[in-house]
Structure formats: structure tokens, C-alpha cells
Length: 154
Image (cartoon, rainbow, N blue to C red; front, side, top):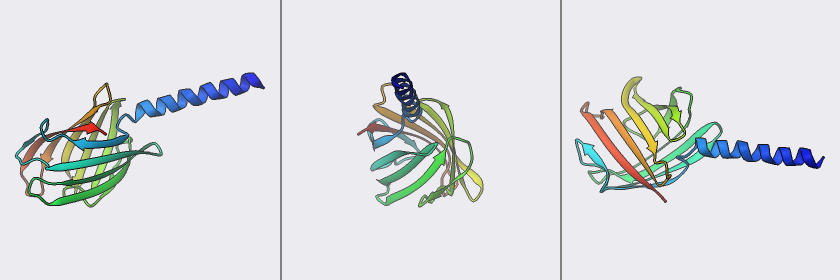
């Protein structure tokens, strides 16, 4: 009986460690203006991203101030299965699809009206202290963009 309990505890630890490793982006992230680059600009004035574990994926909530001073807020829930998931509140995207590359890297695709609007690569640093989000696509005006947004874990 005691041996079975020890095995169950060890199995639970292995499973929880694996799940935590698979969700290195979980946490609250603050946009780092100085380390980020937007082409064309301007970049965000401020932004906070909250990522929570949700089933086999994540739940994301974004709040910030765009380069023109307008506030923005959007959210979504996505699994790492490459399937489109609805995005609420983002004028540049109706859906987002996530695909896990490794423990620290995710690729995502956003769509607006069924058309791809951006390809995104999200990389959490090995030390877990920063996250870099590289986005390429077309904005609401149809202009091509390449953005590198860096976030610091809070």
C-alpha cells in the first residue's frame, strides 16, 4: 500500500513537471518598449499579457495602449493543435491557431475574414524571464509589417 502511494506521488510529480515545462509562457508579461522593434512603427506604448493554463492549451488576455494612444484589449483560448480558435476584441484577427514547436517555442497564425493576417513565432527564453513575439503579416490597412515585441515576466 505504501509503495503504491509513493509510486502515485512520483507519477503525479512527473506529470505536473511535464505540464509546467510545456507551458513556459504561463504567467504575466509586461511589454518592454526599449527592446521591441516595429516596422512600420510606432510600437505599443504599453501592454500586459496574461497567459493561463487552460485544459491542453492556454487562455490569453491582452491589455495595452497602441502607438497612436488608443487602448486595446482582446482575449482568446487556444490549444496547440493548429486549429483556428476565435479571438474576441482584436480588430486585426478573428481567429488564432497555435502549434507547439518545443517547450519554449510556439508558432501561431492569425486570420481575419478567413485570410491569414499574421504569422507569429513566440519564444520564451530558456531562463523564463523574457518572451519574444515576432509577427509578420498585413495590418488592417493592408500594409506589410514585421514586429518584434519583447516582454518581461512579472
